[in-house]
Amino acid sequence: MRSFLGSGKALARRGCWRTSAASCLQIRCQSTAEASAMDAYSRIVTSVVDTVGPSVVAIKHRDGAGQGSGFIFSSDGYIVTNDHVLGHAERGISVSLTDDTVLNAEIVGRDPPTDVGVLRIPSLGRALPAVQLGDSGSLRVGQLVVAIGNPLGYANSVSAGVVSALGRSLRSQSGRLVDNIVQTDSAINPGNSGGPLVDSSGQAVGMNTAIIAGSQGLAFAVPSNTIAFVVSQIMQFGHVKRGYVGVYGGVRPVHRSMQQRYGLKMPTAVQVAGLDPQGPACRANILPGDLLVAANDQPVGSMDDLYRVVSSLKPNTPLRVRVLRDAGSEGMKSLELMVQLEDDSKRQISGGMRQMRLPIPEHLRPAAQRDFQVW
View 1 (cartoon, one colour):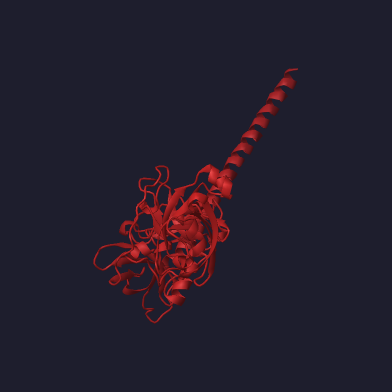
View 2: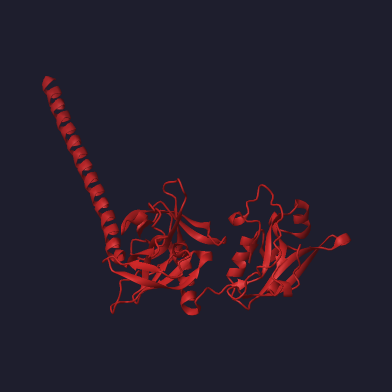
């Protein structure tokens, strides 16, 4: 009996040793796997930096009024950056390369509605390193991204993170919304603006644009597909060709009974406050006081909704709009009108047009802190 018990204890000890050894082996394997994973992560980031880093530039106003980042997207010296980095410095912008070469830059074109600007520097007789624009439409939440730029003047700084969200909207300094913004938790600070947000293959999937003051891990980038469209338009025409309506208006709430009566899909509409007297909307017989409720069968509840429809159309394209007009004793009358769009770069609302300011409901925030916008 003792012999049996003794043998059992010995077996138990051997079993415990085997279990302990197996546990140690499992821990070592887990540690090795974690180390390998970290090495793989590091290899991706360092590879991206080695590939993209030489293409990232520092942009400065020669009068010292501002600075930011940008990146070369064409080996013959074309650079893309944020429009707000260029500011009011139509002349006097310098670009610093990673080898400390400083060159004067020429502004090729700007597009404030998307916060994109294009510069050109001399190619110095050699092909400059360039970043390829990727497809931001294929991004996924959680995907690794790397931000490169010059935050607070610290050149060639790198931060890594993930895509936190897609499809955000961000208002540019022009007051118009930029759609499909990429949100990331990569550390971005003042001076990073205009630098590339790149994926693991070294392609630029966005351009670092904005942060929320006082927050951490909330940064935003203009998507590369928007950049590609804007850059192609600037390179071809010197500006982005968008449709122009010539309407000055603001948001107005629509009563539920009116929604049901006229089949409106939005609880608000755009009330026309004024018109460009020589513009397309005026020629189409749109009148001040009309409520714009749809454009090309898309519901319109704000000037942003109208802009999304109009900006997707080329100049000289017909736009079908639905308006509700006060017909006096007959009540509201629904009309469908055809507007022939013009190029918005050729026409602007006349500075002498009467500026109407109507009260905005408290629960509706006017875009860019203004009551009305011009589209």
